[in-house]
View 1 (tube, rainbow, N blue to C red):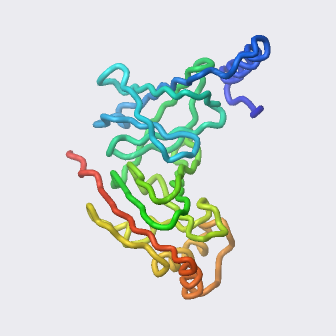
View 2: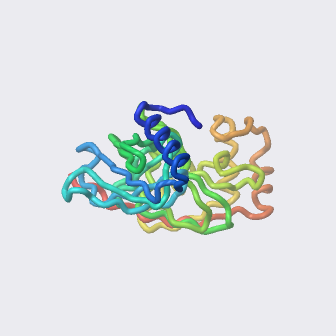
View 3: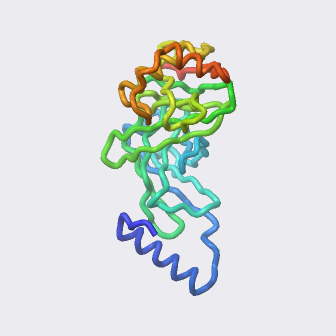
Length: 254
């Protein structure tokens, strides 16, 4: 068992182990997550969606009570607060970093967020192309944050993308996992994409980005001294080309 982070978590897990051993019961059928946003993070937010355990799937939480900065989300599976990262999509208003929850008791967790991204928000990003993985690589900003990666496979649609708190990696190298692949939000054509724009990112854009990021040690492998042309050729067999459609959120009204 992982080392307990807090006394209450230790007590919860110990109590659960005793109950299961003595009664032969299965794990609790559901977990309730209580979400708290501070006033600044909560401002103008109407909908909160929960992503967890490294999956880029977001589930709608319910606001309780109405007009508060508190939400609740229920899942029909047990969650271990010591190892489960949570993050939020804020309904077109951006996203948060990742944090772990504290245990109230066996079936009730609570997580507090005090920051969301401050950069431009891409409300929807539709990616089409070869069936490879993508990863939303989320950085640590505040002390309570944890690094995490949330991903799926292409084709797919990403919601509430905010590049000041995350990098979007596409698995363009067959032998490398998505966490070690090219960060495409650094490619100028995507960074400058306008509302409703559809752009193509292929070997000509990916190869120079891969060289630059490797030299900056932003990939998982040693800096490469292969010429850009050689990498471009390797990405053409099979061809790595992606069509990305961007729908940006409307600007905030001051």
